[in-house]
Structure formats: C-alpha cells, structure tokens
Image 1 (spheres, each protein chain N blue to C red):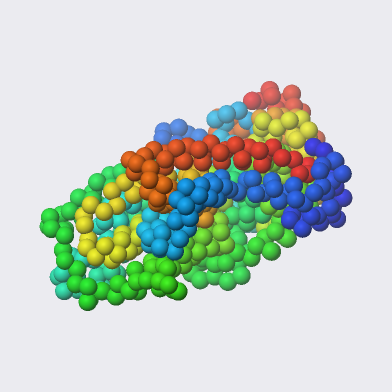
Image 2: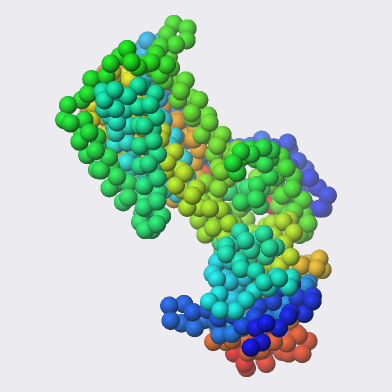
Amino acid sequence: MAARRVPAAPVNSAAGAPATPSAPRSPGRRLLKLALQKPELMAVLLLVILVAAFQIRSDGVFLSAANLRGMLGLLPEVALVAVGVTLLMICGEFDLSVGSVFALMPMTMAVLMVGGWPFWFAMGAGLLVCLLIGFINGWVTIAFNIPSFITTLGMLFMARSLTVVISGGFPPRLDPSAIPAWLFVGYVGPGSLVRASLLWFLGIAVLVALLLGRTNFGNWVRATGGFLPAAQAMGIPTARVKIACFMLCSLLAGFAGMLQVLRLGSPLPSIGVGMELQAVAAAVIGGTSLFGGVGSILGGVIGALLIRVIDNGMVLSRVDSNWFQFAVGGLLILAVVGNAWLRRRGRAMKVET
Amino acid sequence: MDGTLPPPADAIIAVRNLHKWYSGVHALKGVSLDIPRGQALGLVGDNGAGKSTLISILSGLHQPDEGEVLVEGRPVSIRSPRAAMELGIETIYQYNSMVPTMSIARNLFIGREPLKWSFGGIGWLDERRMRAESVRAIADVDLHLRSPDALVGELSGGQRQGVAIARAMHFKSKVMILDEPTNHLSVKETEKVIGFVRGLRDQGITAIFISHNMHHVFACCDRIVAMALGQVVLDRPVSRTSIEEVHAVL
C-alpha cells in the first residue's frame, strides 16, 4: 500500500479534499469516476442519442405535444412493472409472473364489481391478491430453496390461468359510472398533456427510489442482493426482506395492470403477455445486475422509457414495426456491454490510493 | 459433572462441556474453555477439528446440542448472529463480512443503521452521521482510506478486514472472533491484520483468532488453544509453548 496520510486529514469525497501527492488531485476526475460507475449512465446516453435521432428522422414530430401525450400515456404501465422488477432484482431475485399478475389484478377487480362490490373494495381486494401472490412467490422460493426463476415461472402460468378461469371466458363489462377513472387515467395538466397515471407512476417511482436509497430497508435490500452470506452474518432478516420485495413487485405489477384496464375500459385476460421480459429488459438496460446488489430505480425507469421511445420512434420513422423486438434486443445487449465497459473504465481510474 | 462449575470472575466468555453433532458426526466432544477479558486467544487445529463448530456456536449460527455458554458469567443461548452481536460478540469471517457492491459507510452500518426517524422498524438513514462515523471508525484502527463512499469491492483483502474490525470496534464489541482473517492475503497485508489484532489487545478487547498458520497466531496471541477431533488437546500461554509443540499434538 502506498503513502499513508496523516490521520488528521479529512476523508471527504466530493468536496475536493486534499489528495495524496502520489495521485491525480482533480475533483473533476473523482466525479467522473463516480459517474462512470453509475449503473444507469449507459441508458441515459442511449436515451439522449435515440431521442435526438428520432427527432431528426421524424422531422420534429417525435417531441411534439401530440406524440409525447401518446408516449407518456403508455409509459406508466410498463414502467411501474419495471420499477418492481428492478427492486426485486437488486434484492437478488427474479419475478417472471408480473405479466400474469398484471392481468389477474384488474380481472379480479372487474369480476368482483360485476358481483356488486363497490370500486374501492374491489380494487383493494385485487391488490390483496397481488400481495398474496408475491408472498407465495417469495415464501416458496425461500422455504424450498428454489430459484425464483422457476417459482415465478410456475406462477406465470398459474396466475394467467386463474385470470381466464375467473373471467369465465368472457371479459366482464365494467360500468364506467362506478369507476373514478379520471383519478387514474384522466388527462391532467396544461393542454391535457399527460394522464393522471403518469403522476401516479412518478409518485410511486420516487417513493420506491427513496425506500431503496435512503432507508435502512433499502440498505438491507442491497446487502441481501449484493452478498447474501454477509447480510445474514450481520443479522439482517434476509428472508423477510426478500419476501417484502416479492410482494412489492407483484403489487406494482397489479396496479399497473389496473391502470391499463382503466385506460382501455375493458379487462382482457390476455393483457400483459410478454410484459415480464420487457420489464427485465428495462431493468437490465438501466444497469441492474442479474446477480443482484447493483442497480437503481431510475435506471429501470429509463430502461422502460427507452423501450417506449424505440417503439414510438420507429413508427414515426416509418420503420417496419416488426423490427421493434429486434431493436429492443439489440439495445439490451448494447446497453449491457456498454455498461460493463464504462464500469471497468471507472474502476480502473485511480483517483487516490 | 463439571458443567456447573462457576467460571472465573473475569471470564468474559466461558463454555462448559459443549457437544455438537452434525448428521451423525460428533463435531464437538465436551469442550470447556474460559476466556478472560482482554485476552487474545489463538485457536488452531486442522480442518474438521471443531474450531469452526465452536465459533459458529459462539457467533449464533448454530446451537449446541449439549453444554452451556456463559457470557460475563451469565448462561446465555445465542440464537442468531444478531443475538451474538447484542451480547457484544462480533465475528469477522474470511470472506463474508462485507458486501462488495456497497460503500464503506453503508457496509459499516448494515443492520445497525443510524436513523433520523423510523416507523415500525423502517426509517430514514442518517447518512451524514454514517459517513462521519465511518471516517472516524476507520481512522481509529489506523487504516487510511480515501473516502467512505468507496466501494468495498475496490479494497484489498487486508483493507476489508480492517474495515470489518473497525466496524466491530465502532459498535463496542467486547469479543471479536476472527475466522481465518489472514487467508489469501499478501505478506504485507497479513502483517497489517496481525497489527489490528495486537491493537485490539491494547484496547482491552477480547479476541479469538482462528488460523491455519501457526506463525500468524504466535505473532499476536497470548494463549494458544489447539483442537483435534472435537476436543481441546493443548491449552497454554504462548510463552510456555512453541510452534513445534503445537504441531506435535496436532
């Protein structure tokens, strides 16, 4: 190890503390190093590039109010699912059942409302079903030591099947007058630019990001996903932390499904198919590690936004829409490779001993 | 039965006639030990000698099948790592005491985060205090690191052990169990860790140092306890034994 510092020297990070003589001393360099190690950096760069490219290709239509309204109207649904999946992946687990929960929650709600339940009770019951599914996912995974990939794959089929069974084969008809749809999907703001769902999504995303970044629970989530034996040795209730993340993930997926159904006006049993993979893609594009411990809610949100931008931008650029999945796949690989490269560069940067 | 003998008044940890079976294997066969406050005890023995079993009982990972553990003279049952920490017993493992993907400040307070406010056990981190206290804790063990925000994964093995020891000292542990802390470290780093253990003795903290390497144990301990086949086969002050003698009984 290199030169020791006098013990009195303050160990301060961003404020440009006195550096050892042996290392480059610019505070800008240290900030650059921290930035390079941010998991969501690559996604931010790709987002800026793609938005600029689509804006040019579409002759300025891409960032027009009308187009933004359409894009932001769809964003909250997949992005909320991505937020939950990101949290769970940081905790070191997977959830493939979110697409099915996305359909099951509004279907439960609709069936109960047809049975005479008032909206709020039906919605509460639907969300309770989500929590129960999350609990089962987590409990089975931990109690039987099964990879969550398998547990939630099972749940993917079971929840989808339940959705079809309770619908009785016909989508129940929702009575618009019994639902305060304006509260969830109504247009708000100047020029009716955004839907209320965007505000719900932003509020929830901020709450989850704060939970992960600023609370002791978030610290336990990162420790549990980062290195399970250490978290256990430090006395963290890792099983409960994981189960809580599973439950939160299912809850967000169900809520997102409800938003979509309220937007479309009818609960179809087939909604959300493939959603789980889009959500995982969003999380990974946003810099979340498949091995747990690394990632951010912001990254997951940006990943989801990127997928929406590609979808919408390709249509505006008159690219054959069959290329959409190809583009998402390419983006996924590009982002992961780019992320790894940036992080290596960041780590290799020596700022001080 | 000698299991009920009162421990010497100054024993911070005493174990009496401990037995442990693992699926038919008799891993501990009636181990009794008194560890006085402030002693640095070196625990040596081959793989499977029972060292790890003894340690995992003291750190709350396993419960003994027979016998008792006394902390400061009181019989206790250590049901979890958390319970051990609350009794002032902190264990530093070879690999698994730090989360590499988290910062030094975050690692120092895993599970014991200072909170500004909380509700039902979940609360808002006092990050300013975490950073300030981790800077102080690290300086206290004479370790010099650039920033409490650096990721533990970027530290060397010796530095990680230093941070783990700083953490235990910060939480005023009375007993520190170091499980093979010098494994896979360079010579220089090993010296550093041995220096940390010597520093513990100076501060009156009891240390239990487990190692394969006799030289490391002899370099920093007051007393050597050798185990073989689940029993204590040698227990002497370091001044009255030698590496050769310990090798001979193992």
